[in-house]
Length: 105
Image (tube, rainbow, N blue to C red; front, top):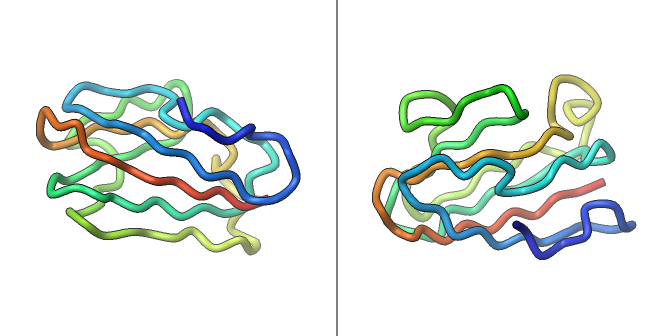
């Protein structure tokens, strides 16, 4: 689980240690989330999905290459779709792969 509270005002910072088996709820759901940045701090590919019913595998989800990040801006994108749902992750190697997530709300 992450180290942030998921409900307090201000951004939360989460650290996840991701292996090559699905890590469901690597970051807990937060309906107030309107944006986030996911930073892959490893030499492995990280794949992530949103929601409890969405399976995460190395072939299903959004792939984040080694030592890169992606940001879903805190804008109108945060009020549509499933951005507030739990974030699930899997790594391309046994790892662990270190991932940092900063959520905005």
